[in-house]
Length: 234
Image (tube, rainbow, N blue to C red; front, side, top):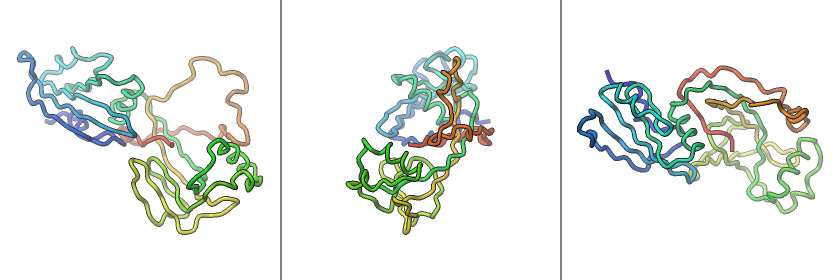
């Protein structure tokens, strides 16, 4: 029976583009019965190499397990030359993480802005949430009918077109809603593996809910899928 982890290894990790693959065939070490495949992936300007070694004997695979080598069954995944953060993310997107899975339902309003003053963006957002006028601060901004997002989203109203722009999707709308600025409502379900828990006590008031950050509404629910890992919100 084909090893389940080998089947998963031959699937491209979520959000990554396969640039190159080299099948090395049998192991260069005559004493080890294994097949080796090296894959090069790219995502948002990040390049990563993964070597997938499938051993005939699971005991041999156990010997290679380590900080840079993740083992699942008789299949080893070597992550060489990657930072711990990139390795962890790639493991998550390949479905290799052992950590728990948290599921977040995300809902937000997204302004249709083609160009803006980034120094004032946060201030404008807070004023919009507070129901105040932003005409003066956005005088030099250019508003349009589209938004650019990472991952899979649903919108209200529905987009009329969507186009890929280097890993980011541009959604265009016929008639965005207008309340001081044109905007659309966006929703997504985001599953995150191996989420972190505080290592100590938070400073009093640090995570307190505010009008701009209603943290008490956050809910965690068990994810249904074991191997899905959509991209985070940008």
